[in-house]
Length: 476
Image (cartoon, rainbow, N blue to C red; front, side, top):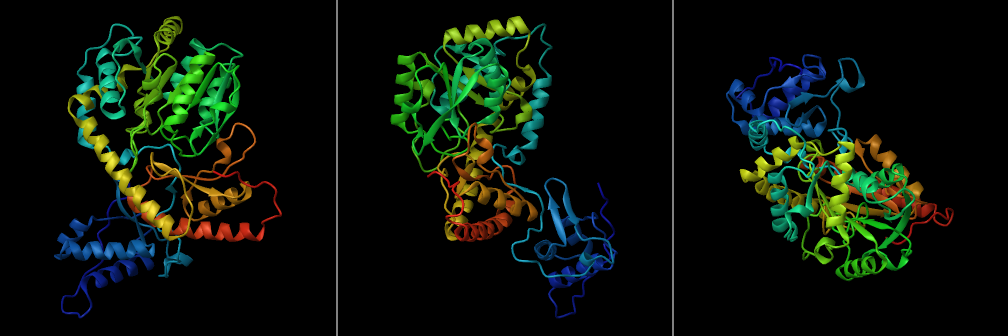
């Protein structure tokens, strides 16, 4: 990490120029003539205020101006750095910022990542210290630690409305993908057909195919998975009813009932991936599939979206035959979830930090969602899937439009994700799956005008090419 240099700046209180303007001018000049170089770490606003004997308001205002001009940039948890190039290069001279060009590069707006920056560091350290106090286990706990399973049962009751009367139906897992791999190996057989939402979670698709399963696309509409479109011969159905990945739709109550009723009739196993299940906005909760039909539904959850995927802690709530098959598989293979992440979650729950963190995440994601929705609405950008989760979808007319917008955004410092890659078969829906959890709120604010501008440019190009490309989008 670069050291904070001794700043060659001063302010003149007798001057009629505001102190913040003087300070910004002095720092800009120092960066332009090479006294400050790219990568130099600046003092905090508090430290610089003390050095110059001015108020922190002065230093904060100067930094804010330089940040807007692109001379400096903040790195989360690290500090503020000079971003200009060495003297003599074109960027070593002061310049006006271009409209729509981000001053902080590499803003991640892809879905599927948590708000890891929101984890309280003191609570995180406290949980790991508490976990380290546990005595070493003499052997594996194939179902998971009892305390962890109890925490999961309480979490499901309080935050997902799922009452687990039989604690034995809760198993610890290494996360959603690990649970899918176990179900594919322990419960399903090679050659079995599994229907997966289209577009859908391709990591689950790859895991199933690796296990020798045949995966077929299950179409979805505004109410979720189209149950009538599924052939009777499927052995299992994989879906994400809380916030369909990646389209963002919630499966309607009627469609949920239809799915579990047909599953019972046809002997299907329904795998419920509770993706983003803890997050919803301005809508009433809908019953989990596992609450409707615990006899045919396997409910999968994970801490990867509410905390961090590095914890490696998830859960499975399943009917007794499925639980027995998974435990037998673990006995045969010796493969099971690590207890370390389980111990950390137990400590977070025991101290009340888990509940506080979930409330914090819900509040932050709700506020970010409002920022995003307001900006898109004001810019005339269509969107859907904003009533739950931490991403929404901006539909686009063609695959070419999607690809072009993503490429243009990358050149402007935005990382975006398109719908095409989430298809198992030929892509029929095009657009952006726009996540708002991985970046900071400041990055999100900076990215929104750029995103709106890029959409308008793409829309204009698409209108010019209308009728020339038959690969048009289906109605989302």
